[in-house]
Length: 429
Image (tube, rainbow, N blue to C red; front, side, top):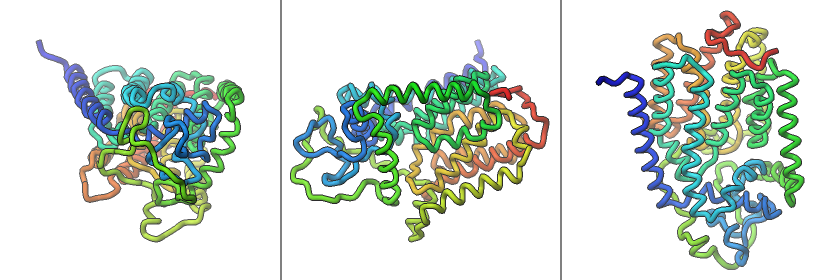
């Protein structure tokens, strides 16, 4: 009995998934998850009413709050997420760290698969082409070093990737309150995510605002019940301003002498500051310029981004209103990507997981593409896989190509009929 092409692709994708999980299980068992550690410590601090940002561990305090990657004597912790992110990580904070590490390994794979499955459910046509796109996107991410770096470090960007997928699905299904909830959740997770949803203002309805506002009020109520929960939000802004002055540093500076040292064993684990020596890149344009001795003023990235956004509005004009809502989301995602290139914060390559749903949506809904477009897309995929190892910014160049490809598709869409071939429009004006 011969197997269909779709079945073969699914079997290959399943084999790739198992092989990838075996690699990451090995990495999880042998390395400490240094970036997960500060997320868990930050969540524990939030639940305990302790400052997430300005109260680093000192010798003699509970080892559950110790982060050996942070030098003793700093005034800042390593935690740079929002208090909302710390709240989401609360289930892991309640576990011993070794258990949390394994649980987060499973959760990362579950969230990536959820993002792609959600996209598959929301966008058609259902058939071999859909299977090919989703299997291809899954295998691309699993084969990329950036995904294994994400898992080995214990990063959390896959949470945003799943939320972005949910937002695309909610827009496609015209579930307007859900659109508002997901936009609010993304903004609470990281305020700059607001740029992704900004183009949706062209089609937002009162139901969208009601969903978002209700979620914000409910979340504020939860933080009001936590000891120091609301104070944490004020501290977040101050901490991010402090971190913006540490361009090119991976940790805050030591400002005082502290007697003592971290315990050799913390929560029954030794070597909590150990990590795999795999290479990674920082795709922040500001950081790259800083490495060459060029330091931009703090306002420059925002001014440049505002100028670029204004140029898009002036050039596209009313044509933006011809775009279906899913394309507006793609536009917002590309705008956010450009902004993150410009801001004076590290943009390590494990953040490429954000592209999971946008890439799948693009390939599923924009099917009439010229050969040159597919060729450039193939080059971008090869770069994501590290095809040019001597180039220090493979992922940055790949993302630049992908943003350009999205721009081409959207420009062609604006010049055509406002109704997309797949009929996707949401929310309804």
